[in-house]
Image 1 (tube, rainbow, N blue to C red):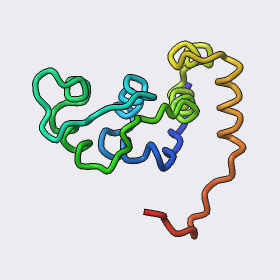
Image 2 (cartoon, helix red, strand yellow; image 1 turned 90 degrees about the vertical axis):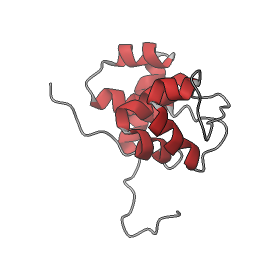
Image 3 (cartoon, rainbow, N blue to C red; image 1 turned 135 degrees about the vertical axis):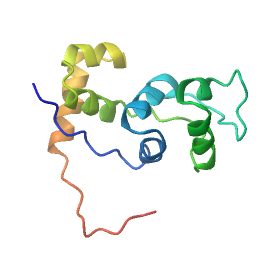
Length: 123
C-alpha cells in the first residue's frame, strides 16, 4: 500500500509543521497537545521540549508567535496518520479516541472543500 499525500496543516498547526517538519510536529502535538506550555528562549538541560525536538528546533519554536496552549489537532493528525497507511483502529488508540470518531474526522476531511488559491493569505 503506497502512502497518500499528507493533508496540509490547518492554520493553527502550520507554524509547528514549518519549524519541526511533519513527523516531528505530529509527535510534538501528540505529546504536548491540549496543555499550556512555556517554550523557553534559552532551553536548559531538563527542558522537555528541547528533549523531544532538539535545542535548535526548540529555539526556533520559541521565536514563533505561538499560543500558550498547544492545539490537539486530532482530526488533522488522524488524516496524516491515515495517509501514512495506519489503520483506523491504530489511529484511534494513538489519539485516545473511538474508531467511530476517527472515521468521522476522516470523512469530514475528505468532504471539506479545498481552499481557493485566489484567496489572500491572512498572515
